[in-house]
Structures are given as structure tokens and as C-alpha cells.
Image (tube, rainbow, N blue to C red; front, side, top):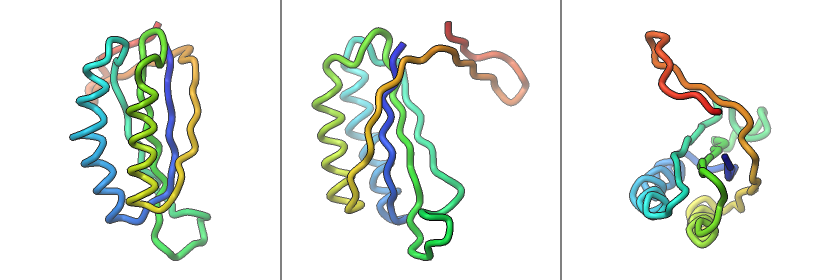
Length: 115
């Protein structure tokens, strides 16, 4: 399993725009690709630089893929361009091999485990 991670900083109003873009543009296009499994969007609980007062927040967007990232590069590049336009920042981009993962619901029931 593969994971693509994009990390960037944005003001609160840009965070909302990024979430709409992810939900309405990126995810539907990823769903159409054969190896897409899901995604996670994380919002830091601290501001950029920990002491900055400009209000920017760190976002990390992670998409998960069965065997590879083929076909997803064009969508990722377009999302990066949109983040740059809206937030005025260039996201850092990394890819990972996912070695182990597990999700549980609030009752402790296992929802998914990999591998």
C-alpha cells in the first residue's frame, strides 16, 4: 500500500476552501482511479512556528493507494496549484510505503487493519 502526503500552512479561510476543493474536486477524481483506497485530512492543533501570531494552521492531506500512485499525479499537481493560489504556499509532498495501520470506532470495534 502507498501513501501520498501533502503538507502546507493556511489561514482559517483558506483551510475551508481547501476542504471544499478536496471534497468536491480531488476525491471524486481519485475515486475514478483504480488504485485509490481513501484519504485523511489532518489539521494541527498549533499555529505555524508555534509562536507565530498570523493564525496559519498546518494541514496534512494523506491519500492511500493499493499498489501505486499511477494516474494520481495530475490530480495531485492540480491540487498543489490550488493550494498555492488559495493559501499562497507550496505544499511539501512525500510518498510512503504503508507498513501497518489499524482503525477502530469509538466503541473499540476494529474497522480496518492493514496488512
